[in-house]
Length: 232
Picture 1 (cartoon, rainbow, N blue to C red):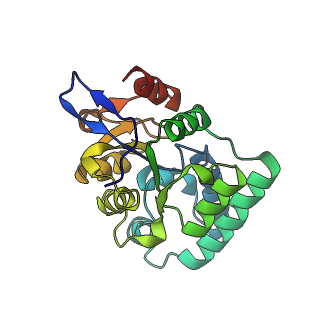
Picture 2: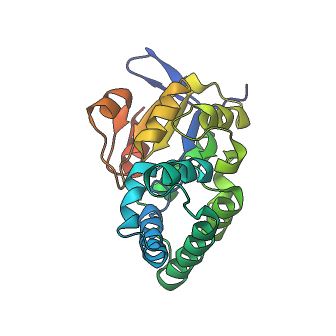
């Protein structure tokens, strides 16, 4: 296993040292869940489904396959997923082109610090490889990641542990020595099931008591995570 020159020990040396950080993307790195929600709302209206953007609250962390299953079960058994995907992708890029895509507070600072301290850094996102890697490259963040697993690389999406298990493997760090950074309940469940400690930085959905009990910490921004690492 490759480990950094530095790690941090937690809770008076009781917890295992942390050598890796695994980031979710949408809603954690980028303020993109709200853009997705707006694109869903617009396309849903065009397809005859009112208030369609509200479905994002029930599908955060899902990959395309699982979202299609959700839509066919809860919206329409004949839901036109292929058309919906093409149309929402178009709307998403239109919004981003007009308004830009905000990087969430603390992202750049945390990535720079983690890289400087030789932590292994991975990505575990339900977004497709092409979409996610393009966004990260455009924003100058791709270079920080030592490994990445995308939604089209897993059989089961979050809350299955598969994506986090694979993400840890890409950076050669045991899940017990890695921390997951998430904005969604399904991601917290996924990381904990993989044997990791998970920090929740909520975006669209606040954690309930069950998720709070599962999470190692609940923070407002990634600046809080940065302080945790700095304080050791």
